[in-house]
Image (tube, rainbow, N blue to C red; front, side, top):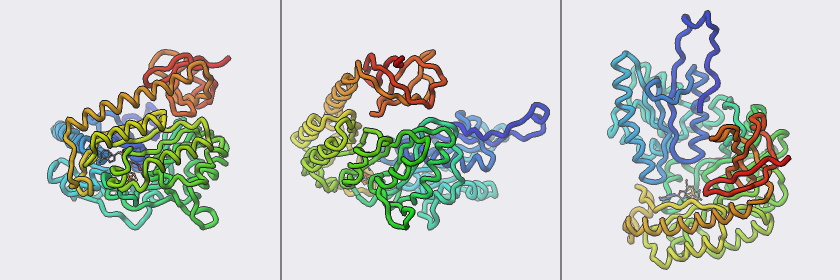
Length: 462
Ligand code: SAM
Ligand code: SF4
């Protein structure tokens, strides 16, 4: 992600203008972090920074981190080891490098990060990104090892500069943050705080700016996006369905998606929006996590397997072609072989287009981390492999049903092969086709000729 705000310098001026400051941003984890990194980059562009993909060029390096599973969190420390070497080498040639750890590891570990990795100059929680320029100024003023992880009173979205993201066909828009659900395995309520929904007017304005810059598709983001309840134009709380209808009225916006949803918040008006709103794509990511009611109760998911199946039945009745995907955790504390079989059975019965599966990872401070019956690693590994084989077969089957059919594809960028473009079907599948580069940003009918493990290929209809 490179900002397009580099100062434009003519040949005669080149010698006299100082080189812009450079920022390297590495993003871990979910799409909400991708969105946050874009917003940080924009805030820094206003301060004269341009992005670089080379840590060795960076005056400022930011790791925007994820704490959801142990592996994700630990990756940060290996990256910090590499950045420590970069900082030393740059210092030898008289250059300063400020190192920032942002995101959910920053929020969860705070001071511990600077103790474990003294090379870090700034630890910045996800609610404080708008303070980045001010905190960098304090570092330049001589302060060291700043840790900013309080949940501030002001709204970071209002305080950040208006969107000026680089031109893109598809963009993320965070509409809701935080979560009050407290699933017993999950760190999100602790790292992102309580649920907060942005007002409709601010979101419509941000979406308009994105569309003006060529965006055709917007994915609405939230840790619990269908719990959205932002203030509407009438001052009353608006549901996610209401927000979708407001956004669908924007000329030039062609596709709307949203993620991630909780089954408990899948309200009737949102289900109906899938039947009524043409711009709302027929794809829904709806995590169920586990197939055994005993495990679902221990996870505090507050729904049973039968309720989940009933819900997806109602969603499919409203929008028969909808593609469903899900998240699943294997090896939650106390999960027996029979419980795991119930998960596999649910995957088969639900007929998901796609699914993401994870080994349970004990997270410090969450109730599940101290529950009895922690499942040994080799058991988790074997269950995950078995489940993934079922998921992959389902994905192949789903993709295979499209061969010979025609799909409207929104082309996003050049493909890996010369002359090829790659885009997305309404069902979020990647589709490759030989196409004129001028078709990037356009929705074009493609006849699907073959289905691979992760994508479809086809030819543009004449
Ligand atoms: N809000 C969403 C929901 O209601 O399910 C999920 C958000 S979470 C960022 C994404 C996924 O990570 C979850 O659906 C879950 O499957 C997985 N996850 C969360 N905590 C986990 C843990 N401790 N171990 C393994 N996977 C975990
Ligand atoms: Fe985490 Fe999602 Fe549960 Fe909230 S609803 S606690 S984000 S898994």
